[in-house]
Length: 446
Image (cartoon, rainbow, N blue to C red; front, side, top):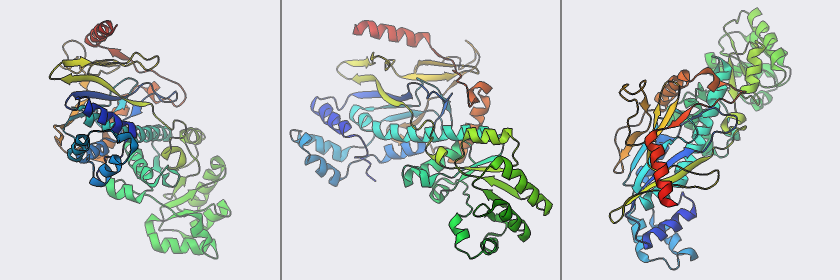
């Protein structure tokens, strides 16, 4: 893929304007962050970094794309040299990012891009879309998994995702957020995510009798057999599954009052000697319904969560933004940039996020707050180099490694951050150097 046109059109008209204004060689620093968390989220789990790196490594414009742009009326007066520049364009800048699976909070940069102005500007749309979507799904997954209290959760939402490719990425992001796996076969192959599946009701209905469908499934899958038992009569389906005995993994409940049905099905299985057979529950589940089922002590071993997870239905978007914070040229040196817009103000200068045990400090990228443990308790600088000079400096962690990192980071957050029902603000302070820079730049601007 050339990736060139996977951007908002105004990025390209601005690029043409920068080119004709002689600003193409100026070096820009952009930061990607969330202004504020959704009202029902206490953190956001960052995901999507490998796809960002792939995009930047392959950013280019094909001849067909450039010919298309030449023919648009908005470029009628554009100098031909701009299109020649697009034909040669590659990303030559630097990318800094927090590791995938890191919980972040409002105002904290997840990514920093330092590159020639046109390269950094064109990349905005793709970066926002990819990080925003995967982080949204990974965060939802973390909440659902937390509600399950150790029972496995599988991402089942591809059929309700906003596109087939969104389904693939939701499977990946859900796994990073703590899901045991996904129903999406492509996500399994591309990202080494465990895949799970049972049968649809159409399988049951395709046979003259429910027992026939069960027998055929058992011959096909052996120990991986999961019987879908609610097509006709749930308890009778459970009895038919129990009568067939081993081999099987268990049964799936997809409808009805799970609080009442799960104990009844458990008893049927246990009475048949199938005490190791498991019960999976599906059907419009989310973290709140799972919380209720766990509180009612429903004997459910695994949850399949689809629509609510793959669309993050209660928080279906993240307010991620991508803002210019520095601009540097040979003629005028470095200039710090910022916004004073009401409710959309930004802070000038490239930054670093320093994570302490109980709070974060947002400082300048040149600082090293608490890194040696001398000034305060030890801190971790979260933004790390990923690409320098347009090249990946080392292979990125695998999806499985990102998942483990997320689990470790989430375990370190205090319990209130994991609440499903109450807001908890993790403390984020500004360093004295960043405060001083902000005051100075604002005074100069005024």
